Image (cartoon, rainbow, N blue to C red):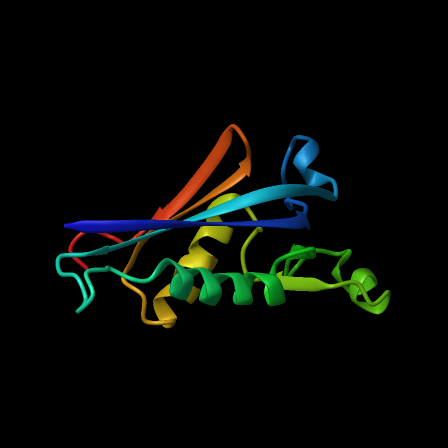
Length: 137
């Protein structure tokens, strides 16, 4: 099995509804998304995927949707205020945890036709959450 990994760096803000600690307050992160692709075969030039192809695809989507944006749960009571103020907001059905952000990026990469098996998000230098393709798929 062959594997390639691409990292994309971006910044975002969020808060977590019903969190007991300080993550219930608006705050931000300098995140790193780590996208892992896998294939049992290489293409005609010997690659799983060109690093620039996956990098350009993911970077374009992250830049337009997540980078320097507030990621907010659809039920967050401050959401209408942020929208009325003209702030950039990406509305999520779930709490904007690192786990849910990893799944969000995973789904976008899969929609792009890439053989993604895992997306991990470093929310900080020492905190990592990931989503991977379920076994057997």
